[in-house]
Image (tube, rainbow, N blue to C red; front, side):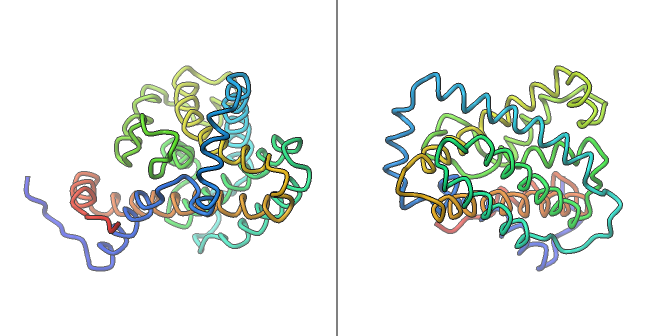
Length: 267
């Protein structure tokens, strides 16, 4: 089918930038690259019990954070520029405190960090014209935690942007209730499936964060730097994701997907 519309130069740039962000991350948190080989080795050495604990923590944190944020974020707020810098400052402060206490404070730091990151993601979604009260937008916010370029630890996963969206949307197909209601009142099977899929990918980045913060020499400043890298990654994913969704509302998903897949990302 021949496209009846073509992207404006400005929208083409938006889509080019979005794909660059999605695929040029390389590693889940680019700011941790200098510690890459050390972290890579330490993750392989984590006991299976600890790896399961990290996956469990990731799942529980996402479930609680999504529900509480959806209840408290104002969906009728006027569309404004997202407060990215404010959320970066708060997440960095959490990392400084968590880093000072090392691995013992990891779970508490992760809860606060993820809560703030989710609010930042929702803020970005709202700035792109999304309605936070709809199931589609709520799922789109949750999807951000599963997006991004391949890491050293998830090479077996299909991390293509549209493939990830398709898989997550299929997991929740058939559910008509709001996400927040499903999470608060005995989550439905589709909601549990999508949470599980997101958590399985999110736990990879969580494992990297855990190993990095467990290093004694990292300390408070290092903890802040790790959290800053963490939120920069997910803000970048959210900006790309909701920019693409805005273009889909304007041009249709088929055209945007076709143009997106034709874009060549610079190495």
